[in-house]
Image 1 (cartoon, rainbow, N blue to C red):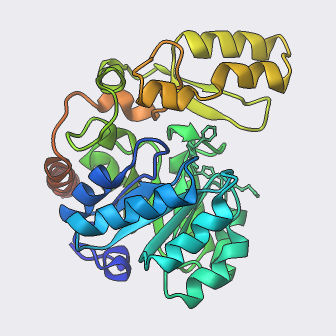
Image 2: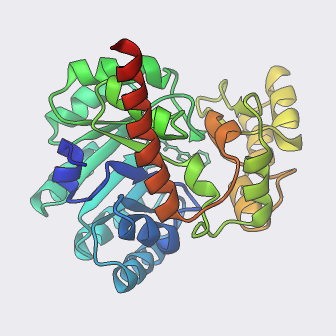
Length: 313
Ligand code: TUI
């Protein structure tokens, strides 16, 4: 399958694995890239040398293009931005902030820059600064989110910019991929569905929590603090939302979430930890390899497009 995204990124399928903090290491990134998608190493809150090491490990087991995601709230973001250039990474995605100050350096180095945005205004600014594409991420996503839904955000971003748009948020199977194309996207970025793949090295409890989750099992904490984050509901979200309703201070709230993602991913504490997952968790029923997932997505996408054409005939 060929789209402007597969051409720009030199990949086989227009499927990008989300840059999930603490989750997306070289194992999953190389598995996705080796399967023809774009694997992404997440810098998350890690330090620059950890990221350099992950890049080198990916190259040892994968000769296809892969990317690195920088979470811009990371205090080491400046250093990681340079490591990406030094290590000759081909694609960078960014999240949770504005990557303007790095754009010139990355463009000069010939890196494909794909900021994740949650608004039309940010997408236009990124295009102006030379972004090669944007990921338009709807509020259905797990983790740090914006306000607009994928269904409303993607077509508005598509109309506002001339660079290709990748849809993210609420895409869990091939029907979602087809729908994203209908909205004008040229590729998709998916996170939650990749959480349960064989090559995803998170604690088994986290995978089981995602597999067990139903449609209404995610909650958004931090709407009042300006850092809304979507996770599976558990003791942590109940306590957080109660405190948030009572007008707790930022310090009190942060005490509940500090290190919460690590607790869930590494220790498997799905009760007190921050089990980040998107609203499509209810669609995720079983684990498989990254290669099988990508193949299934492409087959289902084709099936759903054929089925719609038959119904319209
Ligand atoms: O970045 C994400 N999702 C993430 S990052 C993350 S790590 C984390 N851990 C604990 C607390 C908070 C974060 C988990 N999930 N998605 C991409 C994304 N970016 N969604 C929304 C945005 C965004 C928001 C504001 C992009 C730009 C932006 O601009 C603000 C500005 O500076 O103007």
